[in-house]
Image (cartoon, rainbow, N blue to C red; front, side, top):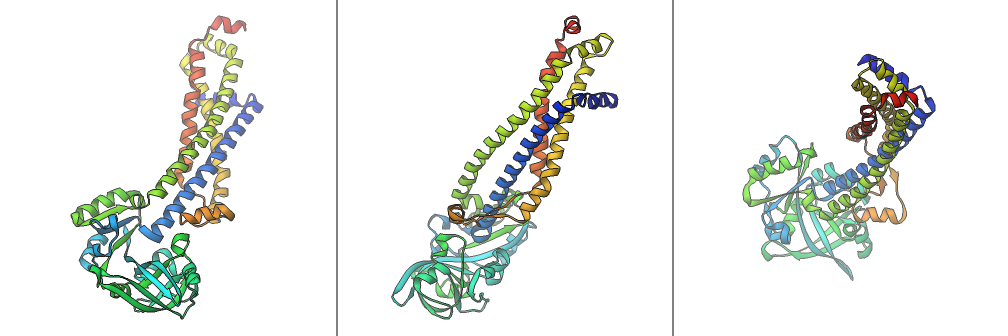
Length: 406
């Protein structure tokens, strides 16, 4: 095999121009496919990360039946025993308790229906950096009897930090919820629909407001290894029983999943076109090498070389051209993609607004997941295996006398 490899390496450089042109076409197509796939997977990861951190978590736990109508009457007790069962799973990094409901928020002549998120300030900030989204005022503390108001809601209600906001809603089991709270801070939320009507309140204060004492609507769960999502979900379902709903982020974000799947299908078509470029480039080289060397092959077989060894030489030649080209493309792409991974491309205009509508930061991030580079290498090898069928058939059917006369 070592001798055959030497012969193959020398053969591919007998016509340097042809070999270099073939490598260049493979390099360009592979580089573009790496760039495209990295951008796609980076964007998907960014979308998922935003959806997971800002709202659902990787897994969300509710009382059975809550997700159908999201009634505050479908809350459950925030107990240490329940939290302990969830945290016993080594892949669970954080459990975020939330009490979510609605209320009319009013200031002077202005009133608007709003989402009210009662949260544990410390846990919420550790997961989604809520304190960094404060545009004026200060962040909440656990014992606060104050609130945070989203920027567009504050603008509509014409309120500022230090003003008082009246809140009116329906509490647990129909109890009237009414109170007034001082605005401690105003924040910007990246999802426009929520930024227009979102209020954050400390969990204990929110529970008192809705008379849902020590109750929550959900636990949002963060994981150290999202690849084990289904396994962890099954484990929690078994542990918690039928009393609770255990739902993954995909079940909670159908629109986002459909958008990713639709975009991914288009990306795969584009990759298919680039792979066709690689395939035809390799096939053209192999075909020319085979046709030009028919007499050489005939002489080699005539003096005693087995056809199978001759085939292996051609196979090694094709594999060398593809492997060297893909290796160079990876070496060229890796530092470029690493820079873009650490410095995402910012978006502006309508495209930025479209990203914000999905609650995604208006940037184009890039992924450097090793799987991207491994898949490219494997794909090129598979293309080489398919392309090599042509010279195989030619060598097996080679007419020695006719080829030596050509």
